[in-house]
Image (tube, rainbow, N blue to C red):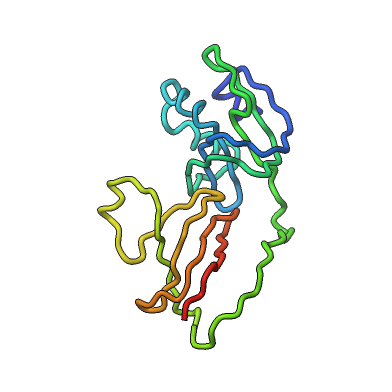
Length: 189
């Protein structure tokens, strides 16, 4: 992989299909993802600069990443794993490049259990209120109606469903691949 060898000389690539319970720095756009093991990324910032991961993403996909995040695990990974020797340290699965899915194949979406809502609830004007979310203190200064949060892959957050100011239900919001899943756990009258 000449794109990676541009940054690191001693690499070994192999195909991988596994669940990885380690922290990774995730870069992604609408179609591509790149995972870099957090401890490896931090160590390389000192010699390669803080933007080397974004530059690698651009080298691999000819696009800039739109989102970067930290994920605590990578579930159902299928793709290329890159082991790297760097500064007398070996990093197994230092960089993960997922196998790309063809654009013309429709993925199976999560199946949903049908629930019956009271007739007087119109979901068109329902808002979601996040009950608990850890955010940096400097982010709090800018909070307001319509504030947006980034959710990590498979992070679950308790929410309330509001119609106007009235709580009409509770649920759990979860980021799933490119979308979100909302499990309604309680409906109130």
